[in-house]
Image 1: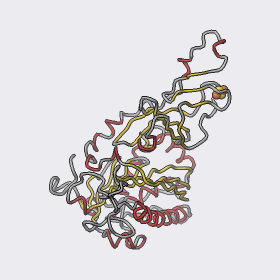
Image 2: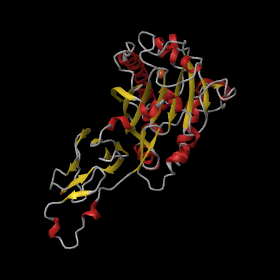
Image 3: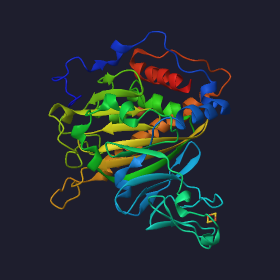
Image 4: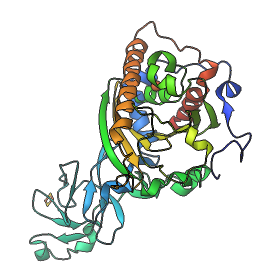
Length: 380
Ligand code: FES
Ligand SMILES: [Fe+2]
């Protein structure tokens, strides 16, 4: 689909109330507190789906790497000397030792801290002291174990399952949809990590509606009316749409745009902020002047780690661009994020009570209800 405008796709966006399925209720308590459900999610969802681990700009130069954890597995994501990006299990092929202990770094090779077996950033075993004395030992047989890795719009996705559908097939419904936002070439200006005492699904359900905005986000509601949501992705692994802002404004502390436009977005889209969830661990928030991405990492039934990155046009920082003030956006969303995390934590506390029972979703919560349906489909 090309650019998202009402003009080109007159019926694409719908007010949430029009997509409301009467009778939808929140999930039962075990989905938020049970270790068995948490383990099933790890097996059925996080070990099988394509999971976003970051953006290619995080490993810009040959030798750069970072170490995410997916479904309890430590991985190494690295850019090799030929500029190809690879993903490996963080496990030595000698006696299984964890190779990288740091969260990120840059190095021409990965050396095991135990007996110094050394691997290239393409995963090949380069050196293994004294192993040439072992009859039949071939270095080529001991490359690091690779994980499936694909790029989508510059974001790095991995899948621990060889049986998962090809990423291109899964993401086919989004083909071309974000082309105008220039996502592959954006550069991160800032990351904030949050620890939230709430189940990871509450983060998605919270993100997917603005029914809560008037009370929880007074500042956000002033610049972006809480009833202005119009959605175009209504069912499935990708959900969301846009909310209105005044043209020339953005979601910043000052209310003004804080950088060069991220890409060649259309006229109308300068008065919109697009919010999409990408199942199961990514939230994509596209503003005229920056893109914010949340990566959601479940830690336990009641705890979630969230990495929030703010991306800007690659030339936003150039000297003749006096507008560039990423902190204006970061401060606005750090405040808004914390308001959200607080109500998610309160939800977790209430849901853990014996008094909790599933409650009815309102007409303005059609997207959280659709997210729950997709979650249940994937959990099965
Ligand atoms: S365990 Fe890695 S070199 Fe021995
Ligand atoms: Fe919110």
